[in-house]
Length: 125
Image (cartoon, rainbow, N blue to C red; front, side):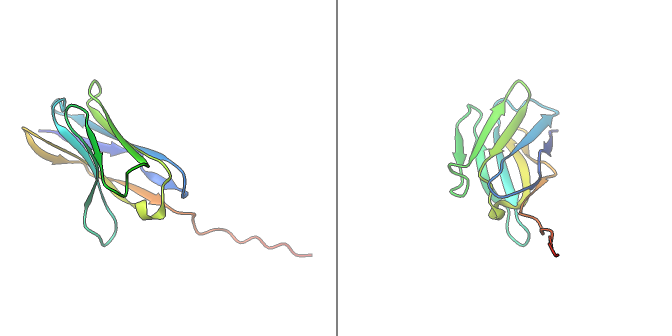
């Protein structure tokens, strides 16, 4: 059995960065493929980036040039560095591993990219 726990999500402004982490336990994922998926509200889950057991990464077109997936085999973990975030990146991000023990998913971490609602400032004499 493999357990995956994601962390690092949150609310950020457009143009900022976040790093997502996925910690695995239960078994070593040294030779497993690892991936990050995301699912926005009302949309299907989509692949963002994946990395093979030997460390070869690949990216969805929407992530190329902005996101970097990397793994730390000593920590049994995979990461997703997200730069230049856009409102369209808002979604729940899931970690997934696929290997000889089957396919496992984490519970997901919410990423929201927004300027926020703003606050009214009134200056009056």
